[in-house]
Amino acid sequence: MLPGESIIHLVDLIGFGDSPAPENWPYTIDAQAEVLFDFIVSRNISDVVLVGHSYGGGVALMLVRKMLERGNSELIKNLVLIAPAAFPQALPFFITLPRIPVIGRVVMAGVSADFQMRTTLRAIFRNRKAVTEERIGRYVANINRPSHRKALIQTARNILPDNMDRLMSEFDKIQHRTLLVYGENDPVILKENLERLSRKLPRVITKKIENCGHIPHEEYPHITAGLISDFLQEALSIRDN
Image (tube, rainbow, N blue to C red; front, side):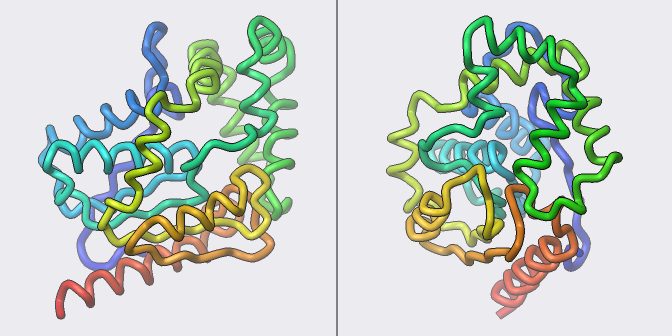
């Protein structure tokens, strides 16, 4: 998919996937972005194509702001945002529930992970054929671990950054070429917020995938990969010219 020779770093955010879920970690967008900042800078990784989805898209935007402030934003060459969380809005049920004191923790612990994930994925996927048993199993494996379940609850409670207003006001300072991809039928991120972000980012290319919900890269992986590949091929042609 990627043009030329590329190294892909698949980074799970703290408390997600195969990353650790420490007990007393803050689980904020700012803290997640700081970890990614250290990852990139400590390894002197350059020409970065930074990809973030949903909450991870918010983390990506926060990371770019940090790098702009610290004078090393040139390490990032292109930005790919997939249904990113960028503006305040009503939160979906699977984020709202864990935020409720006591009740959220009780429900998260008392309701089977399989039921939680099956219900959530069917709600946020438009392409129901993509909600396979294998996919459900992967999500279940993550929240079945008590440490990761606690991390999810803390992430939900800290979902809105303290400096949200400042972050939003600085989107127009992001001069990186950006690909914004989202599903036409996304039930999680408000369409007006995605369109608003498209207007705010100076060098954005926006692509909407029809009959698609909140996770385009899982509902239609080949279409999403093709959009990213075309975007990067264009970036190479611009650089070569």
